[in-house]
Image (cartoon, rainbow, N blue to C red; front, side, top):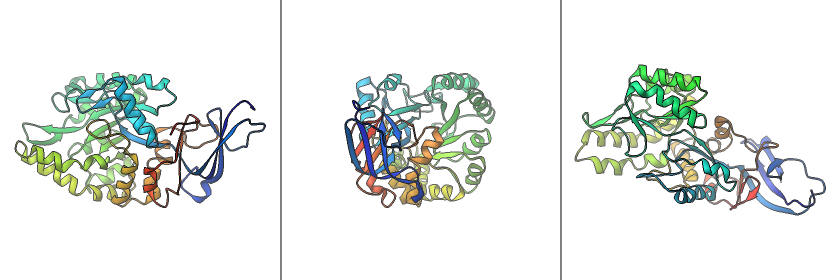
Length: 365
C-alpha cells in the first residue's frame, strides 16, 4: 500500500442525519470508503471539514435542452456542472439522448436512467418523448424498461389544446396495464404530473413516484401516503409557472389561470404531503430550460416550504440514496462525497459552496 495515495477525510463525517451517525474521520483506499486506518500507507492527502454523501438530483436531464437531444460535448458540460455543485448521483427522468458513454467516465456523476419520456401524441414538448396512443403504451413501457436503469417515465398530464387546460393523458386501463408490465420487468414507474385529475388513477394503478405533483390535494395526499408513492416536487422549476402562464395567457387563459393557482399553493402542497408521510426527494428538472447544478437551491426551497432542514438534507443525501438503491458513506462503498466548511444540518445554504468534491475516491473539485 505504500505506493498508493490514500485520502483521509477528517472533521465530521455525516454517515446519517443523527449525532450518533457522525464519525470523526474516514479513509478512501482504492476509491472506496473505509473506517479503518490503513497500515503502511504511502502518500496521505488530508481534507478537513463536514463530509456528506454525494448529493442526489432525482429529476435531472443530462443530454437534453429545450430543443431536444444535445451533442456529447454539451452533455459533458451539463454533467460537470452538476458535479462541481456536489451532485454525484442523478436520476435522469427521461431523455432522448444516449448517455451510456458517461458510465465509462469515472470523473462524471453516476446516472440512473428512465429511458425516454413516453407521452400522448402532440401532448408534450417537441423532440423529447415517444409520442404514442394508449393502445401502444404497454409496448413502449416494456421497451423503455429494458433500456433504462430500473425506471420508466410517463407524461401523465399536459395541456389539451382543445380543452384549453391541463388534462390527463391516459385512460385508467392503459396505465394499469403499463405499470403492471414495468413491474413485471423489474422497473419502477414515475410520471410528470402538474394537475389534479391524473393522480388518483396513476396511484391506484400502482405508480411508484410522481414528478412535480403540484396537483396534490387533501383528497389525494392520503392516498399517496397510504401507498408510499414518492414525490419529487422540483420547486425550482415550479417557480417558472408565472412566466409560463403569462406567455400562454392570450391563447389559453384557462390553462394560465390553472398554472398560477398551482404555483401559488406550491409550498402548502409540499408541506402537506410531507406532514402526511409522503416521501419527498430533491430534483431540479435541469436540462430542459433550467440550468444544471441547482440541487442546493432545491433543498433550500424544501426548507422554505416548511420541511425541517435535516429532512430536506436527507432528501438529497441519505434518504435519496436508499430510495434509489445506492450506497452512502458505507464501508466498502465507492467514495462519492462532498466536504463543506460548516455543518449543513444547521444551515442548508452551506450546500451551495462545496469545499471539496470527491468522486470514485478522486478529488475532482
